[in-house]
Amino acid sequence: MTEPRRDPTDPGPDAPRITIVDDDRDVREVLEELLCADGHTVTVAEDGAAALQVFDPEAFDLVFTDLGMPGISGWQVARQVKRAAPDLPVVVITGWGAQLDPEQIAESGVDEVLSKPFQWLAVLDIMKKLAGSRGIPRTAL
Image (cartoon, rainbow, N blue to C red):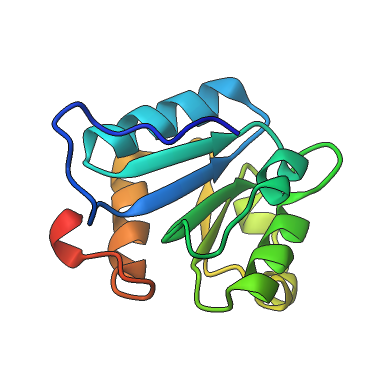
């Protein structure tokens, strides 16, 4: 896991804190850059094991996790996050969006699904839907 990065404009201590878990470096970097530029504090992990090893339910307001990763899958990340913090929103990122079983989504505690390739507006829409559920200020979105 990397150290949290903040937009150079320094949005302050109330900035939404987001973690990104994805084994695809390009996806991690693009999402991190977009979220940092939008004023969020972002921490990244290259896989589920790295994310869960240092996971602190009080340190984040939202988790984005890739679904298909070697070792610990996004389903497992979502379940572990929800066990530790049931109100912490979890968004899975996947190329299989339309093929996902709604029952499995609900059982894993996943709040939203972000289909690849994603558009920045889709990320913003999800963030707006989840605003307020864990202290994500609507004004930050």
